[in-house]
Image (cartoon, rainbow, N blue to C red; front, side, top):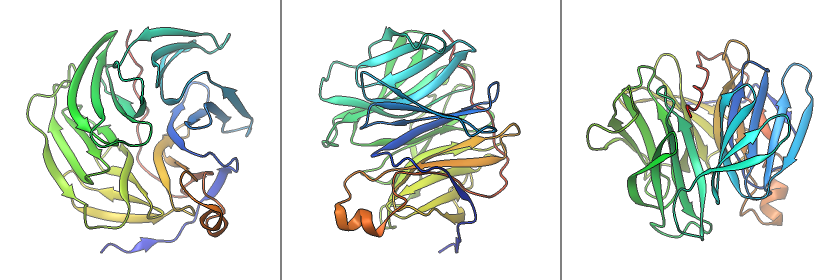
Amino acid sequence: MTDLVPFSGRIVCDFASELGEGPTYDPATDTAWWFNIKGQELHELHLDSGRKTIHPLPFLGSVLATIDPGLQLIASDQGLFVRDTASFELSPFAALEDKPGNRSNDGRVHASGSLWIGTMGRRAEKHAGAIYHVAGNRVTKLYGNITIPNGICFSPDGATAYFTDTDVNHLMRVSIDPATGLPTGDPAVLSDESAAPGGIDGSVCDADGLIWNSRWGAGAVEVYKPDGRKVARYAVPATQPSCPAFIGTKADRLLVTSAWQDLDDAARSADPNAGKTFELGIEVKGRFEPAFQL
């Protein structure tokens, strides 16, 4: 097994989210964004000043994408919404599905400006979720019978998508059209992680094509080559890291959210940083997220 590199980073936010998820970074404003899904909150952190704002939400939000300097797209349990960054007004944009017991989970914008977004049961009911492709307001179901959709990210050339069902714990890859983000083939297993500790959670793909994955339950961020080989493991000082994001004006740093969801009092006492947000403390060759195209 690849050796675990000790944590050398820092806590960038000591607010303990029950389910921190969906981090992203806006280089135009030097701002990191993420969600506390269960707390119905959108967190905003200006990196240079350290100014932190928590925005209450009327739904369970999980993914944010920039549209333009004044608008953002948010995925939630009630569908997709456009958020005005000045007025904070939320406008319904598109429905995802008609299962009221479901919520959105992991997602990411493809270079084409389309969005891949996963849904799941609020109690992670077996096979209740799916993964969708959203181009403008056109929503296309890609894969059904998903329990916990995660790991969605794309290769630098836009020709490969990665994803997982954490319940199965297979890191999957599929060829996609770089112009649209739609699959052009059938998914195949890139790495079978079903026997390894923890679960494959949120991922990002860097400029070299390396896949950086938060390993829920194992307190680590793990790195895969495009051929599925695991080449590095970095410790995170929380048992349940949930998703990474490239941050900084050069996209050369890595932010990682975490969660205290499902931890009882004894487990939380043993895991005092659960739910906090971290910078990993290493230099990476990241990429900025594309804008969602209306």
